[in-house]
Length: 72
Image 1 (cartoon, rainbow, N blue to C red):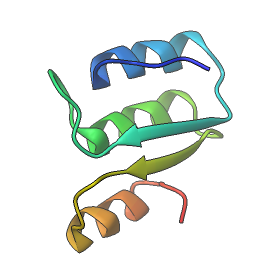
Image 2 (tube, rainbow, N blue to C red):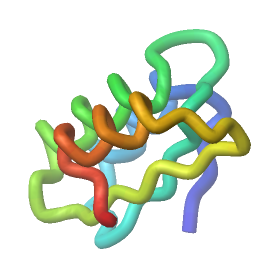
Image 3 (cartoon, rainbow, N blue to C red):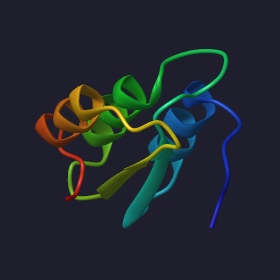
Image 4 (spheres, helix red, strand yellow):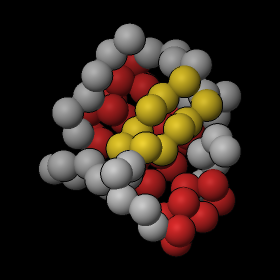
């Protein structure tokens, strides 16, 4: 288990490690947001399951995450 402080750090970790599951916050500080982080992680680790988590109830964000490959 690893933790990243930003989307940029999460992408770097995904490039270096073969994770089965990634939990990504919708709002990421200092760099790409959660949706963009998910897209980049899926680009390097297409078999990884991605779960987007957030404290913000936004249907549009949920739909965008699902279209990008997040698990439902």
